[in-house]
Image (cartoon, rainbow, N blue to C red; front, top):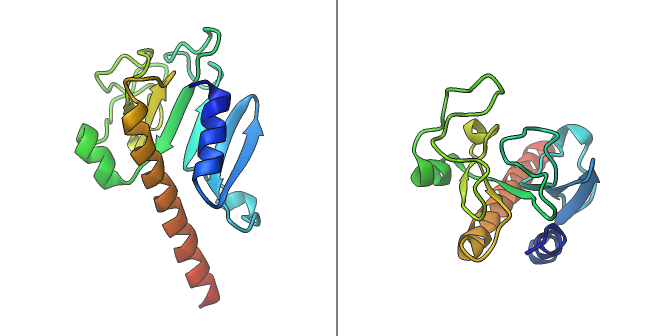
Length: 154
């Protein structure tokens, strides 16, 4: 699946999703009314197409991209155990994974401590795993949105 196909899939599958683009990357926010203030615009998933944030994913190959998904702590720890704490001199977490490996769900190289996972160039091996992870991330974002709206109403 290309980055464009993944973008189409996420935006058409998950209700209330707003798609934002910056620097060639795509950010998926739960914003059903399209009115989130900038300070609350936190994505539940992103697609990164270049090495401008880190170089360990090796996204310079034509067509390469990294799908990033923000999970709940419970799901992240069920998949990978405790979040990593040690970083190398580039700010990349030591997770025991090769962050350049293609088509494998793994902890995010920079945001694993915030319960983010990623897949570089998703394909056949991760096709069945990605859907439920995206559904969880979207549902978690929707719950946070509803909780904030409820608190704002008093």
